[in-house]
Picture (cartoon, rainbow, N blue to C red):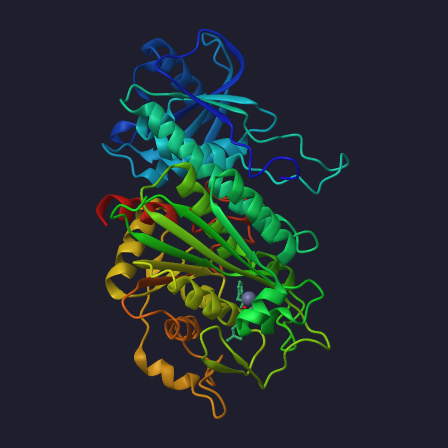
Length: 504
Ligand code: BES
Ligand code: MN
Ligand code: ZN
């Protein structure tokens, strides 16, 4: 993302029939396991291939023992087709209706299995156009900025996707899906950019550039402005680093004075989390390069909302800091004053996310939003409770359940979690209004949510989405998710914004 602003979108076109000649292209075709459990693969995908060609593909698949199992890919040469090659991708057993994420994952696996391919044509789009386009773009996502010629992968991301579809509105769907996937890829780029290169000042600069291109109102507060205005949490966390903190505000004014709702977005932007003086063990500290995953998703989402012209106001408030140990760092036992006046005893400097987020939430509530969506890589306890792929969502009961349902539909699979009142007692301090950690180690994800709740203004429907695990894929690639930044929960937040725009 050095010269361009944001991830470069591939060209996506919709066609109603197979191009006459596309010898450089790969045709991606879905297959299902055969009827009557005979174990052979059956090609699906509507009117684009004639019976003879389908027969030819099936004969080849049978010869290779390919059965159309979920996410099984097979590359074929099909002489009767004027394309370079065919890639079949398995969907498992046939169904009348295809869940979006089955198609998204299959498309992702197909895209990941191709290298050095510039153009793909696909019939997967006849089953679910948007999911297929998103899966292809996200599966072909690559992050190569820091590779020299020595190790640069030769497989660049896809440049061109030809989506075969007979559906009405296919063009509009393709544009929307491309915009969404590109936003997710932009969030991934931020997460994958190492902390050497992405520190608060640089992060703010890049967010500003993205925002300005998208026509957003942009405001950046630097460390001096933050101290003057009383952002004690952001200043306290940021003061151990030679690279000072920032607060970025990006506003999309889509309601245009009409009755449209106002949604506040808040995302944790710790560009690196050493733990501070309460320092983390070395073993997997490098994963803390993902500790700005919430901020990345929030920035990508508000920019997407503007590009898609959503008829609501969306205002992102993004605190950015680097949590470092040094002689200027805050100490365990220090007391700081959060923006708005609540005092906090910092018992553990590694519980820094809630400190910068509390300031940002109070600031965001000054805009009197109807809804507030906050997301962060907040607690290791999230992964203990739900694993690496399932975000925990907490907050106002009704809105929380709505966000969880939408996230399930999107395949990001957030799960509703409670905020039990009794946990607040664990955050009592003997010197200040609150302590930043509880003395016992249970329910760490919920304790963090209970802390944040103290700062949300009355009457605001809010959620906190903990993506500590889901924002960053530390293990092997799967579906449309490669190693590294995932962009989660960008698609959930954008779908929630669309839902609010449609239903209030
Ligand atoms: N950024 C971490 C949470 C995290 C852990 C994110 C693993 C991604 C993967 C956060 O700042 C943190 O350190 N949380 C502490 C809180 C504790 C001190 C109450 C944790 O989870 O251990
Ligand atoms: Mn921490
Ligand atoms: Zn952190």
